[in-house]
Image (cartoon, each protein chain N blue to C red):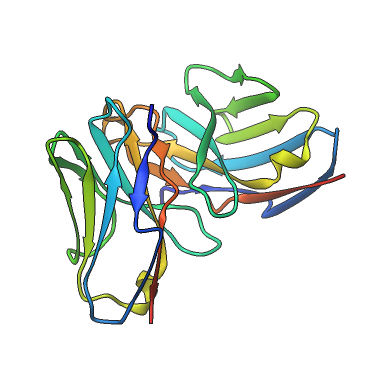
Length: 112
Length: 112
């Protein structure tokens, strides 16, 4: 069935290291993907997005990679900081209807 | 510019009761989407409203209903509450269908 999931439920990194969070999706027709950050007690916050006609997109300290061949998405965070500690979700946008399909999330913990 | 706001912040209801949750969309946004997020899970799409009309619905029973007003604010109504309805309810607004969604802080509903 259609689903978006994450390989690792938790990730612990040292402050200053790079973090990589992975996501697998199953709907090959999906054409738009988003990464969200959710801090405790808050709603998801947009980080970066990518369309299926791209394989890489960079933002400030973040990079999203899309591999359509294996239906895999990753979020790279450079020089991870304590403020990056949160749960990260990948989401798949289902076209004009606009509903997002979220994975279960990866909890990122940054050790000082 | 005011972001997406939701009320109330927290709510406790008894099984069988009815509840109404409210969402004010970001200025200029005509689309509102509602999601249910159970503890430790990713958000699940309930439905989306575009210019006061329902524009897509997820796998939720009819006792979950919604409304969008001319100012594009929205309500989520849940009838005959069940224990499993306990969750964080998120509202997201966007400029248009399929555009980037901005989430509010959510309403934490507890059904006892």
